[in-house]
Length: 189
Image (tube, rainbow, N blue to C red):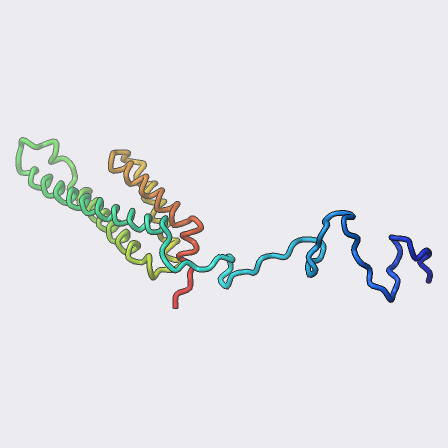
């Protein structure tokens, strides 16, 4: 089989002499010796998936989420004390005819709010202590906690509700961003 003229640039290369690329002709001018045409080679994949090394110390946004959880713990302590005090005052006011309007409020509801605030306090404290040793399950719990805190804060919409709304949103955002994912998915030896 013959390819025709040996000087034809579109013909098959002739054996015996290696072809030298012509300098200054075409694009790219210089090509690295070991890179082929097509897509560039991908950077090496990191040991744990993302290409970035696992963080060795807690990122700033994750640390902020932890501090915000401790702020919620403090607010919940105040809430538990206020609900318990209110339940005791209402229970004592049932005997006094001057406080008939206050005495009509069911104390069981106040004690229920006290128990709910106490449970929220315990859950927030648990999550705040699990930041250094917790894995992806703690991250999921942080997301659920932050979203539920924000949703439950919308209904009463008081000053405490607005504070809980902002804190819940920030906790959910800070634990779900790339830094939070890298921190909670890091290897633990």
